[in-house]
Image 1 (cartoon, helix red, strand yellow):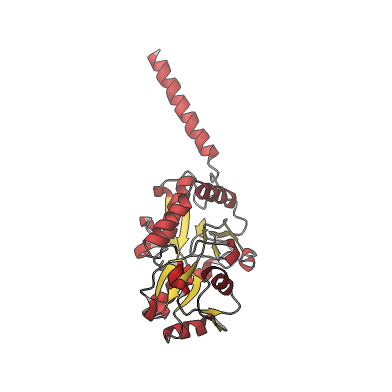
Image 2 (cartoon, helix red, strand yellow):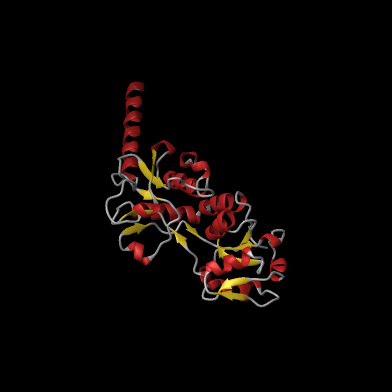
Length: 271
C-alpha cells in the first residue's frame, strides 16, 4: 500500500510539472526553449545597468528584466544576456534576442518594423539646475524663485506655468542646445527635461549642473514611454504584456523605479 501511495504521489508530481509547463505562456515561444534571451547595450550604462553587468540584476532595467522573467515563470538561471547596438536592434529582420532593453521610446515609426511591449517606464519631467543653483531644495517654494528657461514649443512650458508658477518670466529658446548654452553660461538657473535626458546632460554636457528633483510622471506631459523591443510579430509579446500588467498592478514596477531612479540617482520626488 505504501509503495502504491508513493507511486501515486510521483505520478501526481509529474502531472503537475507537465501541467505547469503547459500553462507557461512563453512555452515554445522563446528563442531557445526553456531560456529567455535579453539584449542590452554594449556597454550598458548607469542607472539602467550598474557597472555594465546586467547579470547582477543591479540597475533599473536589469532589475525589471529579472522581475519580468520571474513573473513569467523562468528562473534567473534561465536568462541569457546578449549585447547589441541601439540602432542595430531597431532595424527590421530576425533578432538574436527575445527582448531588448535600451530605453527604447515607443513610436509609431518604430512600430512599423519592430514590436514593443506595453510601457515599463514613463519618463517623468526632472529639474536640471545650473552650477550656481545646485544647492536649491527640491520643493515647490524653492523652485518658484529660480530663473527658468525652456524650449518654447515643448510641454515644459505648460508644466512650468501651470505647476511651478515661477516668480519671474520664462526665458524661451528655439531648441535644447540653446537652453543648454544658457545654463552653462549661468543665464538661467533651471530647465525641465525628461529624467533620462536630464541625467545625461548633467553627467556629460553641462559641467557642474545637477538634477535636483523629479515630478511624478503625468500623462498630460506626453512623457516618453519605454518598451521592450521585439522582432515584429513575436508571439511572446502577449505573455510579456500580461506579466508587465501584473507587475504594474502589484507595485513591483513602482518599487523598482523608486529604488533605481529615485534613491540610487539621488533624484527625489519634488515636494
